[in-house]
Image (cartoon, rainbow, N blue to C red; front, top):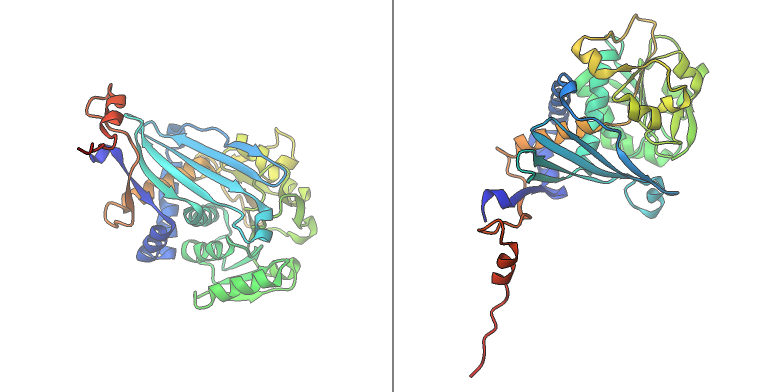
Length: 351
């Protein structure tokens, strides 16, 4: 087989080995830096809202983009009811391809990689928007994303204390147990109101597919940064509308966020700022110490593109992958049928 017809594949097992070889926190720092670099060249990417197929129980989506040299997409689902069946609510895989030939150059699991890049993206936004010197974060929703968020904010933003709340005490206990020994001060709380006391950053990352009010208007005072992660599809929000009206709102890609994010509660002309503009200095971030900043995070294809490109670069020195024979490669490109014929099993005739 030639190099053109084999594709590196990163399985779940190899992804876990790679993450541990790099280190969870160092990997999220590097992912945040790679995403930031790609956001600085935002205009060079193809952009479209993700292609979604909704059902009564969840959503299946494709998230494509290209920078003209490399094409990438992620397949991802969101099925909140899976938890009751002992299944992941979110699973994903991704592909990179060479634009010049159309040949795929990487296939990878992205359930773990998405968790890492989502947390890295949250902390990257906070690095540009949160109050300077923030040390405490409230983490509302303690499911599968929570530990990644906590560790990313520790590594990238210097958070030292995380205050936990979830409707399920078992989820909070799980999160506290997993963060033991991380260097964070972990404080389980009996209510969302208690969790946000003294927190300069508030992260909401719940899973229910519904319009919900995880944070009400009277819970949010001046000077905080809200990292709203859980509202990520039509009909699913976490914040009271009053909070949005009092916040400076920052988004990834407005045509997608207005469909899926917290701002689906607002008129389509409500002003928002694209985060890439803050990163490049084209638009201001936090105006003053009393401002409420809100990152209305829904996840965008360029972030997954960045993560896949980062992964491909790491595979050059960390060989945690398999080579898949995925591309038919006949000696004569016009003779695909002939290649198939020559692969027929040899029938031995008996005398």
